[in-house]
Amino acid sequence: MSNEDFDWVAASGRRAKGKRPEYFEDPALDRLYSVVFALSAEVSALRERQDTVERLLEKNGSITRADIEAFVPTREEGDERALATKAYVSRIMRGFQQQLEAIEAEDPPIMEIVDRLAKS
Amino acid sequence: MSSDLPPPYTALTRHDMMPKASHDEAARFNFLTHFNRYVSGAIGAGNRLAYEKRVLPAFRAEHGRDPEHRYEIRDAMNQDAWHRMWSALKRNSMEMRQHNGRQIVLRQIEELNAKAKRYNDESGMLELDPSVEQPHYQTAVDIHCQPGGYHSEELPGDVTMGANYDVGLFATTGGALGGLNDGGGQAVVEWAKKERPDWQPKRILDIGCTVGHNAVPIALAYPDAEVIAIDTAGASLRYAAARAAAMGVTNIKFIQASGEDLSRWADGHFDWVQTTMFLHELSSKAMPKILAEANRVLAPGGLIFHIEQPQYSDEMPLFEQFMRDWDAFNNNEPFWSAMHGQDLKQVMVDAGFSRENQFTVGVRAVVDPEIFPPSPDEGEEDFGRAAIWNAYGAWKGGEQAVAA
Image 1 (cartoon, one colour):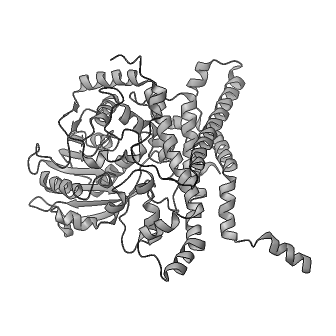
Image 2 (cartoon, helix red, strand yellow; image 1 turned 135 degrees about the vertical axis):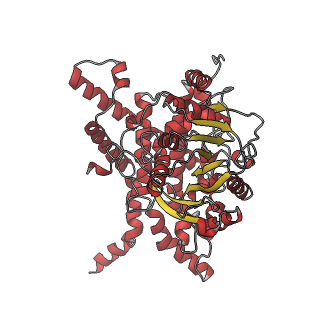
């Protein structure tokens, strides 16, 4: 079979059959989530690629693109990279994590404290 | 510190049929692996907090009582800002997993198709039957949000669906299923070998096998047995048979057939009928039909064994039921909720497996501990995604029956 006309980029993005839940009142927010996290994945992949380049340069002095493709981290290197990715995810997700803490803390509105300190 | 870190994507065993991921494609899966773990682990607890701190109190204030069904909790939580954000995160991660997997597969689809054809022509382990109709419960929505489901083709006779499932399962499960995504099948084998060390089943049927990742470990563990793995989705079977052949397995055959109609096999033909994470992909009418057929083709003394997530019982808190239901409504698993709400033991009784011959047992994914850390949910709950399952089984009664 000849697939010269097959557009794999377009085909890859096909939607799954079934109505997608709308998570937010404004559909723009649903779209924005998709963009932000796709970009987050790209930044993560770029960082990982840079890590690969640095490791290979350190070891071999010069590299080819084929070297990058063939790179397989050792267990120790894998753990170092995984820790870096974990810390990265923690940075981009800080807002969610801190909101979770806020739900638990139930802080009063800041005005209450402003008022209290003004009087005591 | 590093003990709970997931392994990199490159830790997967690259059998010859596995689509080749580029450096950056693997890195995207690494991100998703971490992201999934973060969403279910680090911030997953926010759902319970939101429920207990504001959703439940508001429900009580409005109704003067507690919720009486998981759907009432669902309706209330779907109005909650935290749960909506959290669900949007999880849904997006599923969609990204599919997109990344499909880019990997489809940019090399011609090569994969040619390779699969070569393996399948040579091995004779694939038997397709285009007259098998795709059941409505497989086509109503694309299960797991996998575009095209498990049955469609991007190009005539292709392996896209199976290849995409195999290439991304690692990220979906946070690496918990091991190097060949076969931690479920390995768990089944480990249980059977421990339970009946001398048992040598001769004929084994796996129903709803998709890419055969859980049937192959059984074939390898019982080399003298003949394993028949069936699925209605020929598109998945093409990849499954080629994958098994690429791994050097010879005692397995992939046949396109529906579990609802096993008429090609005589009564008592099999010593073991297996389903792994499959019953929840059916429908209310199909599940009892398949179980009755399984009972018919199972020999007296034979084993039927189902790996599933735990059923919702009266003892399971409604909030946990609601969380476990998430995939039903957000990840295109439309029978998940109803299936887990059923009394599976009674369904099995109705299919012919007497209650005294039934048992349940907890199993967890068996993976190489040198490479793969324990399932991240050790000690905490992941609500339906954990590689920790309940197995529902029965040793069929009859003359050759041996007490389990």
